[in-house]
Image (cartoon, rainbow, N blue to C red):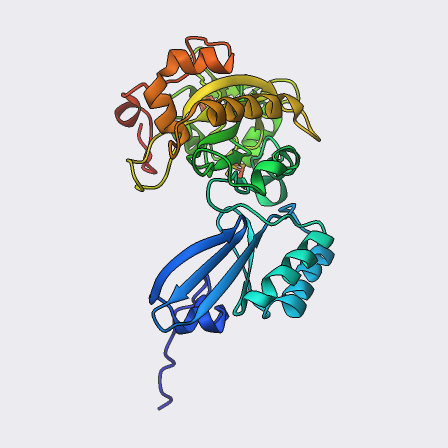
Length: 358
Ligand code: SF4
Ligand code: SF4
């Protein structure tokens, strides 16, 4: 009798990174004695075994064509030792095992337009969502915001002159994969979705859409004799959560989809607790290709933080010390009652789980 075939699980997650490590990193994994930074953009790690590794960190334009990636790979082959990695903030890092290789590597990166920096108390590359290329619900091109803003913040990327490290992020919708950051640039919808009733019956599973709304603003309705949906606009908070399961509930709008700025978020436990960021500017135009109005506000907050914060204060620590009224005074941002929302009831009241409730 033929032996029953054994069915094996198909692994489809992230591949094991160990085979791709630089040999010296693999050899000394978990065995580092200390590290320092000989200059901005360069990390120097020393192992208990005596091995040393220099890591050169560079910024890129983030969305890269294949020619740019080949250029970076050529630099890795010619001036580094054939290994690169990307940080979570999308910096690219080249590892070399002798100090003599550092300067030619930096020169090669500079020649091709890749600035070296992003370490220590600099403004590192902006972590961002990439929905414009692959997601179904983006309202802006977060990568474009990154490129235009980092062009303006270049001097702070290549130096380490901020009070502490500064992490920025951008998100191309307001409900999903954005993260906490010292300063976050987040898509913001300001009008309820507009329903295309002709399409709803063909495209959407209405119970799914109804359950998706965190404030129960969507109801089933018959429109022109066809099953459709209606939105109670007095309840709708314009979050955009109904748009992914039901694209005919279009919420993106060239005029009313805006950008908001949040400050004071922190993911790490280092030196202080993680903090949630708070809204400090809303209704900025979603204005490609340079998003100038967004850049003005971000640079204003950064300038005041750099001048006013004490050494090693993160943005949240600085605001905690001076208080929100003085934050708005010093940054000259207009304050309204809709800003710095600290409503504690959200966890119990909003539909924060994946369970469908009726
Ligand atoms: S932030 Fe929103 S639109 Fe952008 S990639 Fe994440 S889920 Fe998609
Ligand atoms: S935008 Fe958000 S609050 Fe408004 S109807 Fe859609 S899911 Fe509900």
